[in-house]
Structure formats: structure tokens, C-alpha cells
Amino acid sequence: MTAHDNPGVIAPPPLIGLAVIVGGLLLDWLLPAYLLTVLLSLEDRLVIGALLLLAGLALAISALGAFRAARTNPEPWKPSRALVAGGIFRWLRNPMYVGGLLVLAGLSIAVASDWMLVLAIGSAFVLHYGVVLREERYLAAKFGPAYVAYRDAVPRYGWPF
Image 1 (cartoon, rainbow, N blue to C red):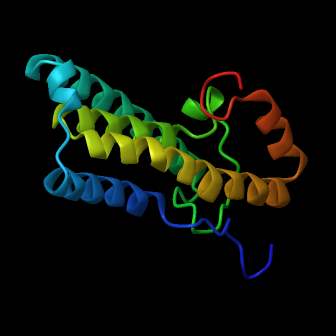
Image 2: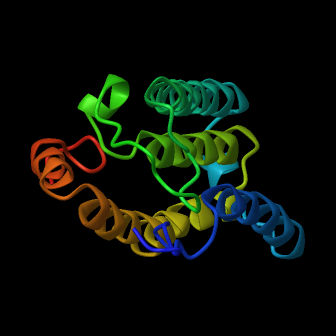
């Protein structure tokens, strides 16, 4: 690859997640909404939130382990040294992003932040168009037929579309 050996993502995904958390809490303070507190009891919010958060952490940690095993960078703004197709990546191509979104959803529900949940849903579109699609183009250019075969065999987000 050239000196520009990275996907050119719109922003580092951890910063997108941080923006969701800070933005959601700020909007909750400025313009409170109480939908989650009306729909779910505190106990339900804590249980659902914890389950989503733990599932998201499990996906992200599993993905980091696969990156470490392949000796490549997990950060999408750095060059990829290897195509990671083992571990959790056998079932979905973007476990860190799915995991991150589950963490944001779980946190949003647990703390009853309607705005954080809305921003988390919106961030899924930012991640898809600003990160994932750019990564896919980069990986196809860098790893050629090996990535194309992997892309065609493994669902992007764990469901078959």
C-alpha cells in the first residue's frame, strides 16, 4: 500500500462512542425525556442494561484477542498487517462495532438516558458509512481476493444481510 495505508475513517470509533455518551448526557440535562423511566422499572433497566453491556464487552474483548493473536492493529486509523478471520470474526466481520453499540445501548438503558439511546442508534449510521464501508474498501484493496472471499462468507454485523 501507499503512505496512506489506512482506511481513512471519518473519526476514531472510541471518539464516536464518547460523543454519544457526552452528547446524550448533555441533552438529558438540557431537554429531559423520560420515556425509558416510563417504559421500564429501575430493576428492568439495570438488568437489561447490564446484559447488553456485558454482551458488548464480551464481543469487543473477543475481537481484541483475535487482533492480538493475528499481531495486527485493532485501531482502524492504523495500517492493517493481517486479515483477521479467526475467533469471533468467523461469525461477524465487525464485532468491535457491534459490541460498542451494545455497550452504548446498555449504558443508555441502565442510566435511563433517552437521548444517549437516540444518539447511539444514530451513531450506528455514522459507524456504517464513516467507518465500516471505508474499512471494507481498504481491506479489499490491501488483501484482495482473500478479503473478498471472507467478506462474501461472513455477515457484516452477524445477521445474514
